[in-house]
Length: 178
Image 1 (cartoon, rainbow, N blue to C red):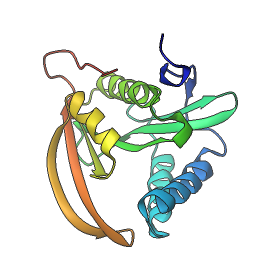
Image 2 (cartoon, rainbow, N blue to C red):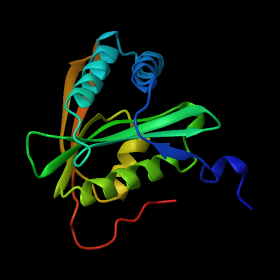
Image 3 (cartoon, rainbow, N blue to C red):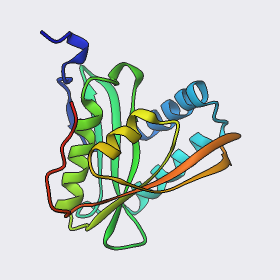
Image 4 (cartoon, helix red, strand yellow):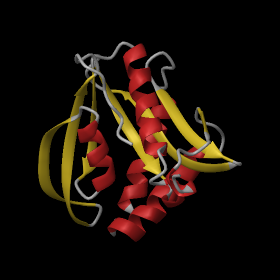
């Protein structure tokens, strides 16, 4: 029998609601400062991404998924438009520490990819950091290709930025690992 903490979480997904933008900015800032050593420029970027998403929101082509359970926000993932009309951007894939390792990331990613396909995108792209080992492993296991990996100085520290892409209509099932 699996331990309770290994079972998929019984939570709900909803769209962006009052208070979510401020929560996302605050939690990104707090957790990335603590875990990655990022400076105050990171939550400023998160705020800009969210402000741009809200200001230009196109419900036919964009979606925010906020995971919550028992009144608590647990995570997020966004499907956003890009400059390429055939490519969606995966944005703000985020899990609270207490929600990690319970299947929530897999569920959020699967929902986001399904929405992008339904919205007519041919591919999805994302930008992340090599230090996000669990997320990068999930991307690789579900058919994403690493396009670039470059050392940079971002958010006040050295990082390795990565660009990933997935063909949303490639043959073969996308298995979401257990």
